[in-house]
Structure formats: C-alpha cells, structure tokens
Amino acid sequence: MTTTATGPATLAAPGPALALVRRPGRVRALWLLAVLAVLLVLVALSVTVGSRAVGFADLVAGLGGSTENLGQAAVVKRVPRTVLALVAGAALGLSGAVMQGVTRNPLADPGILGITMGSSLAVVAGIALLGLSSASAYVWLAVAGAAVAAVFVQAVGSLGRGGATPLKLALAGVATSAALTSFITALTLPRGDISATVRSWQIGGVGGASFTSLGQVLPFLLVGAALSLLSARGLNSLALGDETAAGLGERVAVTRGVAALGAVLLCGAATAVTGPIGFVGLVVPHLCRLLVGVDHRWLLPFSALTGAGLLVAADVLGRVVARPGEVDVAIVTALVGAPFFIHVVRRQKVRSL
Image (cartoon, rainbow, N blue to C red; front, side, top):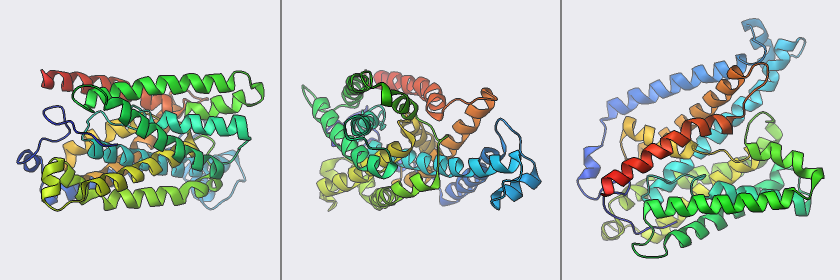
C-alpha cells in the first residue's frame, strides 16, 4: 500500500503546509464533545426508531432484557444492530483514514481501492466452495482477501509513468472491484442453494446483527484498531514525504507496513460481519480533517467516532424512509458517498492542471 506520488494531488503537502491546518487543543476538545453528543443521540434514535416506535417504558424494560410486548422485543433486537453499526462504522472510518495516510492519497477508501470487494470474493468463495457459514470462519478469508486485493491494486496502480498516483490507484481499484464482482457472480449463479444467502450478505447491512457474530470478529477489530492508532505519529511523518520521514528517524517501511496491516484487519473483519459497505472510509476522514486538522493523533480517533455515527445514522435513515421495511446501510452510504467521490476526483483533477 505504498506510493511515491507527490505534488498537488497528494493528501498533504510536505513541509510548512502541515502546520497550516493544525487546530488549537480547545477547538478539538469542543468538537470531540460535539461528536460524542451527536453519537449518543444517534444511538438513542437507533434503539427507538423503526417500523415500530418505542416508548420510554418499553425502552427501559427492553434494555433490561424483557420481551413481554412487541416494543420491548424491538428494543432487544435493535441493541445488537446498533452496537454492530457503531463498531463496523468505527472500523471503516478508521481504516479509511489510515489508508489515506499510508498512501498519501485523498481518494483512498477500502471500497474504492478494491479491498472490500477482495474480502467479499474470499468470503463468497468460502461459502460456495468450502461451505462456511459463520463470522469466525468468514473473518480469516475476509482479511486474506483484503490483503491480496490491496497488494494487487497497489502493484497495478504503480505501473507506468509517474508511479502510483492517487488517480491511478483509484482507477485500478475501481477496475479491480468490477472484475472481482464478476467472479462473485460466476461463483453464485450456478449455486441456487447459496445465491439467496450470498445476495443478502453482499448487499451490506447490520440487520442480522448478533452479539455472537460480533464477538467472533472482535479480536481482529481490536488488533487492527491498536495497530492503526499506534501508527499515528508515524503517519504524521509520512505526510512530510518518505525522504523527510526517514531523515527524522522514521522507519518508513515498518511504519507503512504496520499501519496498512491495521487497516486491512479493520476492513476485513468489518466486511466479514456486515458484508461490503462502501464510502464510509472515504467521506469520514475528509470531514474530520475539516474539524481537527491533519494530525493523525487526533484524526484517527475522530474518524473512528465519526464513522460510527455515520453508519448508525445511515441505519436509522434506512429504517425511516422505507417503513415498514428498511433500506440496507450500504445503499444509504453509497447514495451519500458516490457524489462525494465525484467531487473529490474533480477537485484533485483541477488542482493537478
């Protein structure tokens, strides 16, 4: 997941430009309180809003495990999907911020770079060829598929003149995703016995959440989050350029490898339990840079919190707009993220002229 791209199309310009986007600690603390407050409101909405509205009494009883009426049963069912949306959103937001820092690519995102689809193909192959059926089995294949896809896209994007520029990596990722999608279709079409299961999982959602499946992937998520957060200082150095970072004593290859591994673990584990969900890792880091600047010591935890909030909000919105049914979160995030991706591509193109 390395890149040699420099110049105006990179994530952060070397040298003094890094200091221009710093934020005072008080401003960051205020934004932190604001994000936490919004996140609490979204969690409350996620538990109470759906095809059936839930009153305060049923909410309290449902949180206590009671299922005496439909309202309480709805709360009991919504709690694990809310927790899954929080955890998966945090993983995807953090993964996207790390990938953008590692590649110095403002277009980096697990979905756009083909990493999510690499996880998906590996999981679908496991279902079709090995008969796997649990998140604990999916997660190993999802992480391996994510890693292979990341290396492949990096290699393809590095070909030709200029090396791995942001736009070339994005194009390589989109093309790879399209090819992997074709392979998934080829695996599932002849298998009528699994096609419904694969289609349901591949849409990407949190409706089938359970604490059991979440617990099976939680170790991978924790390790990925730890590696990513511990790489924050190193990513700050990489933002200055590889040569400058090396001159400051940073072990560039080690830092980039550890951070990339953390991002792959986060993306693969989240995909294993929710299915492929795109654009969270693209939108969230850009938004967080506006709030707290480019210092990864702040950007990474903010991206995790904001990613959690975005996925919970997408889940609530999907339940509200299609009552009494629901729209899966991956569809909602695509509706928000696709225009944002086009905006970022156009802005980078203009800057590079």
